[in-house]
Each structure stands twice: as structure tokens, then as C-alpha cells.
Image (cartoon, rainbow, N blue to C red; front, side, top):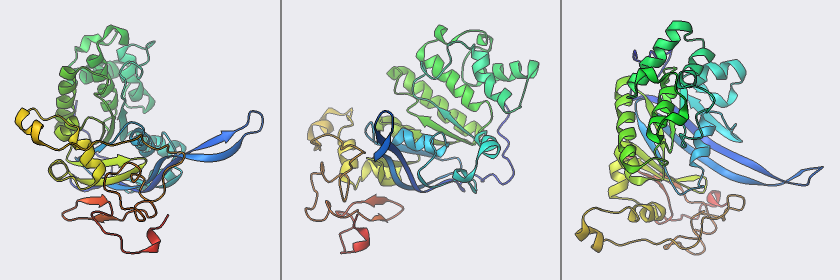
Length: 348
């Protein structure tokens, strides 16, 4: 497949491709059967600020239910944000509707978590991969079939599988089909929503390697969503740690794994096994108590204070921590890193 041809004004490698400002996604809670009334909100994403550069992979990690997948869908406008801006190559996607948004979506694609549920069982592989080519008017007829076969080759599958159905493939092969579908329209940006979590460990490595090869070949930009910290370390350039709808730490991959500053990031990393038994025996573990609070009723102040082993009483439970650079682009939101200064503007 020919390398992706950027559209006019496309960001050059290293320039900011995607910028998120104050992103919020709230889902209303309603009561009543005949007459429904709103009684609250589920704050799935509660004010995110970050950017991704062209050709970069940003890893987004956190426990299940923290808002990672919702963030990815909100970026692609599959969920319309409640507030905030999603600026993709200079265009605010939240302001686009209908045809302009459809044209912009050609440059943004998604690889879904479950390869068994994300492929239509009634469609052949050729139909699944070829559908986006037809929708965007890129190819049809003989050219369409050739493009589909070429895409199958690119992801390591037999090009003569075009007439087979999803149930005839293994989980790893199905995920390759999902990758081929995402590549079909030659996007600039792909949201990888836990693309390896449903696969066997041996197949996970193959898919990760495939994603890296495709990124190098087609100069792709990834948002890689996962709860597998080992996989995130392998593929990401920078990593953002998310907790209950907010990003609490963001820095370069190596910096995060060697010097995590937020107590939540420290707890997550302490749970990752180390293959050296001598090191594994000596290192300290951080065991979090309790469950993740409900996003319908998030705690006041720092949302992590109810489980934090080093929370400062009277501060962490009342005030929202500052989001500041701790040095060399290592951003963290924690009063243990940036001491409380009595700034009332930080109060919830």
C-alpha cells in the first residue's frame, strides 16, 4: 500500500497533530419511566488537557472504568463531548457536523478492543475492509478488490482470504483484519482501544510489533489505550496515567517507569512483575485499599485521596491539586509534588 498522502495543512512529523483542552464527557442520570428527569451526571471524563505530536505514540493507562475508552471515542466524536476542545491539525472537531466531520474522520480511525464483537459476522473480510473505501469514495470494482488484497498483505494475512467470514479466523487474525480496516482510508491518527487485551500473550507481541511496523511505514500517530503497563512501555513514547476521569501524571515513557511521582502511578507500577527474582523480592509494593469511587459521585478535592496512602488531611480532600511541570516535561497533579499554597482558586 502506498504511503499515506497528507492532506493540505497536515502536520509535519514532530509537530502537534492533536490537542485536547478541557475535555469533559458527562452522561446524564435520569429517573422516571413516562416523564424522565435528570438527577445527576456520570463524569466519565472530567477535564483533560494533553497533546499528541505527529508520528508519536501516547499511551493512556489506568484501571478499568477510569474513562480511557470514553476519551478515545470522544476524540473521534463517536461520543460528543460535554465541554472542551478537540483540535485535530488545526480543526476543532467539536464544531464540525455532518459532511465536514465525515471528511475529517477519514484521517482518524479506531482499532477496537474485542476482535470478536467489532467485525460484522454477516460480512466477508473483503466487505469489512472495503466498506470504508466505498463510503469515502476511494475505490470500487476491481480497484477495490486489489486494495483490499493489498491491505491483507500489509497486515500479514493471505490476500485470498477476501471471501471468508470472521468466524473462520482466530482472535489474532481477526484483530489483523481490524487493523487492515483502520488502515484502509490511509489515516494520520489511530486510536488503539486496548487492541491486545482479548488476545493470547504470544499473539499480543505479534500485534504490537505489527503496529510499530505500520507506524514506521506510514508515519502514523497513535493513542494507545491499555491497562497493560508492560505493553504500554514497549510501544509508547509518552505515557499519561488516568484516574477517575482525570489525568494525574504525564511524561516520557522511561521517566515514568523509572521515576513515577504520583502515588497512583507508583501503585500501578509496583504491581507489574519483574522477571528478576532477586529484584522482585526486595522491591516495595504499594497496595491500594478500597474500590474506585463512582464517577457519578467523585470525591471532593483530589479524587484519589480516598485510596491514597500519603494523602494530606485537610488539603487533598478539599482542594484540586495543581497540574504543573515537575521538570523536563514531567507533569503531575499531586500536592506531595507541588505543595499546597493556599490558592483558593484550586478549591472545588
